[in-house]
Structures are given as C-alpha cells and as structure tokens.
Image (cartoon, rainbow, N blue to C red):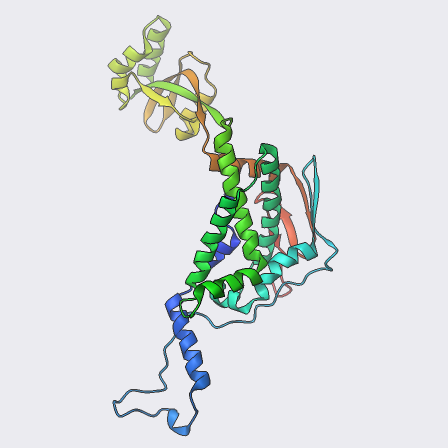
Length: 352
C-alpha cells in the first residue's frame, strides 16, 4: 500500500471508479417515468408509426440498474468493533457507532444508485472502518498541535461534497434541495466532510508551525568515465587540490561548469549507489570511486541544509507513524488489521 491517507477517501474513490454517466442516468429516469405512465396496448409491441420509427425502441442507459446490495452482517450495537492502543491512549469504537455512519449508505437507495452506479462496491464497509481509525489519528494530531478545523474549512469541505451531489440531480426541479436531503439522510457524507476539514486544518497547522523541516545534504561530485580517472582525482584531492576546480577541469557531467555542484536535496533524489554513498559520507571528506550507471564518481558532502517539508507529506508520515506504532484489534465480523497495508481487510464471504 502507498500509505496515502490524504485527499481521497473511499467515497470519492468509489464514485470516481464507478464511471456513472449522469446524462445517461437522466435518460434512464425519463425512460422509467415514461414506462410507468404510458398506457399499455397490444399495438405498443413491435408496431411502427407512420414515420417508420419503432416506438418500442427506448433509450439505452449505461448506468446499471439498482442491484441487490446487501449490507454486511454486523454484531450487536454495544459490542466493540475496533480497539486501538496508541500507547498513551486506548480508543474503542462500537458496532453501533460504526454502523450509524457506514450503513447509512446501504439504507439510501438513491445514494447507491446515483453515487455508486447501482451497488455498493466490495470492500466499502471495511474501508469505512479504516477511515474511522484515520479520523481518530487526525483528532490526535489536531490536539497535539493545538488546532481544530475552522468553520471556513468545515463549510468548504461540505460545499465541495455538495457540489458533487448536486451534479447527480440534473433531472431534478430542485437539485440543491434534493442534494441537501441526501446529505442530511446519509451521515457518511457528513463524516467524509469532517475528515476532509480536519485534514485541511492539519495541513495548515503543520505549515504554520514551521517546525516541519528536514536536513538535506549539499553535494558536489566529479564524474569520470574510468575508475582509474576517479582514483587520480582522489589522489589530487588528498594532495590539496580544490574540488570545484577539479570538477571544472575533469568532470564529464553536466554540473562540471558549476564545479560539480548538485545543490542541496534529499539523497533519495539520486540513484541508489550514489544515495548510499552520500548517506554514509562525512562532511567535507571526498569519497569514491562510486560506480553508477553514469560512470565513476568522486563525491563530497559540503554541508547540510534545513528545508521545509511539504505539509501534506509531513501529515501523511505522521499518520503512518501513528498507525505503525498502534496495536489495532478488529472484530473478525468486520475483517482483520493488515499491519503492512495499515488498513482493515474485509472478511472473506462464505462463497469465496
């Protein structure tokens, strides 16, 4: 798993994956309305109008009809569904609390049809359960930074979600009203909006805190075609030669005119052999020869520079760290906790 907990939660992912064609769905609505109101007669079957068109040929929709989508089997509402030990805090979620959010999806047929194209996707329930844990981690991180989602951030998250739902109701006389009614009837939507608002609040808090920095190496190198050439350069450096001048004279790499200066960047930006050498280098000590796909390198780490970390990346790492260090127990009725993927995997059905 890529451990990306930000931005896209299961609802957004599932909606984008189902590929619902809204125009075709509206055509389906019109088709169903016509079918329910038009009088039936023997002449309707296979007859043609004077213009030669087959009246029985109704529009075909690409949207799947509402399918039987049974909600998952759950335990009594008071039973513990999820139990997480964070080390400094024990957190539990009951089946009742989980189902209040998750089952609201199955309980709204209009949501299932318009949002998921006819059926709730496999694995959705266990993903909602995982999101509950992520939501708790977001709460913990907000408390640690002394932050909370503002009214502006909450309203923005709700507004973004509402825009999506309104787009489902192109066939309605009151899209906004119908969308609001769905939002009110499906607590999962409020839950997703809350996750997104908390996430944005945390990104802003991390950015404003200024403590999220990383030390990166500032590197110069001299690239040569042969190992012997690299050995000669090392010998000259030991004799007191200037690294930058030697890079200008000897290096075959594009950084030669600037004295072999590669700037300050995380070692992960380099090919593995080069990165390993940089990570193990002492400041100011020339090392090599280091062979990569480009040739033979003589490398020096001149210093380390502090650079701000991308707040979204930092938040992702914080969530990953918390979940990696936590002990998570899940009711087998739901599934099991995958310590590698850091998510709940759904229990296999009896037919599998």
